[in-house]
Length: 143
Image 1 (tube, rainbow, N blue to C red):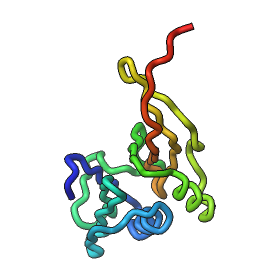
Image 2: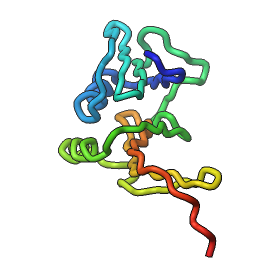
Image 3: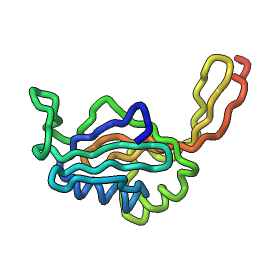
């Protein structure tokens, strides 16, 4: 629990979500509070929390998701050493990708940063963009 920013996803079934994150994606459960439907997860340096809606403390007043997909307008980028193992695990589980694997270069000032990436929706529809770093290169000259 060392990251300055750790998202917490309100989930409809924390056991199903925990299983998806652990058994398919390879996250480890750092700790959990089953009586609250809560689990703190880690994958490499990435950390996130899942919390069962309606158990423990839930934020309401219109802030809870009420229809699939949850987390509209948000995708969470997670750096991994290699996306290959995850892609294999998702395929074995018959779990569809939201965005197929791609190699994408993003301009950052005078450099381009490369990602091999894909997006998958978790059981509640939160979008997870896993990427491996392809390095950087100078921005190509126009024309």
